[in-house]
Amino acid sequence: MIPIFETQYNEELFYSVYFIVFSVDFIIAYRNMWVRRRAEVREREFSTFFIFIGALFFTIFFSFFFGYYSYFSGIGELPEAFIYIGLVFMIAGESFRIWAILTLGKYFSPVVTVYSDQRVISWGPYSLVRHPAYGGAIILLLGVALSLRSLFSLPLVLVDIAVYNYRANLEERLLIQNLGEEYLDYKKRVKKKIIPYVF
Image (cartoon, rainbow, N blue to C red):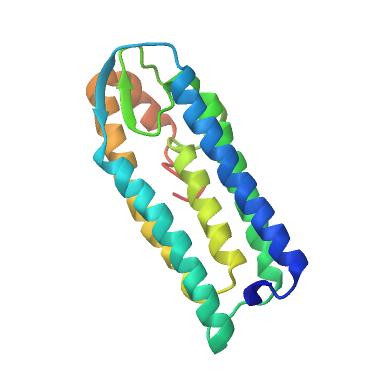
């Protein structure tokens, strides 16, 4: 048993949700990329993909690190109830992200890409925020940090927000260059960028 989870039940519950969430994300995100019908790529940007993945592993690794630190030192340790609160955030964040990916459909790509037949999607989660898949990922990672029960893990999410915001800004520049007024009009209608009603 890993001490930070207090009981075997908590440990098994956390890892069950953790592996299901990330497995579903990987399968849906990359399946969508491989089954997409062929279309000419207007622009593609790879560098932020590696920053994106780096931020993901950074947050998860240090959430575990600080979870152990807080448990054994007693400094910044959160109550056991935060395991369950975190799991709710993980499920909610991943659900929102999957909703965004499925809504975007053939236009979704793990790598920032603008296709020749690109159109603005403005329904579903895209009526709430312009980059809901990023918002879902941030909520998911906040859930991981909460479940591992350390106050020191929570500021790590700020790193993810900064990275996703940088990537979203780059994506929007490419969309404006390629779609022009269509995307600018959408940006005027949907004010929030990543997290509904917040940012």
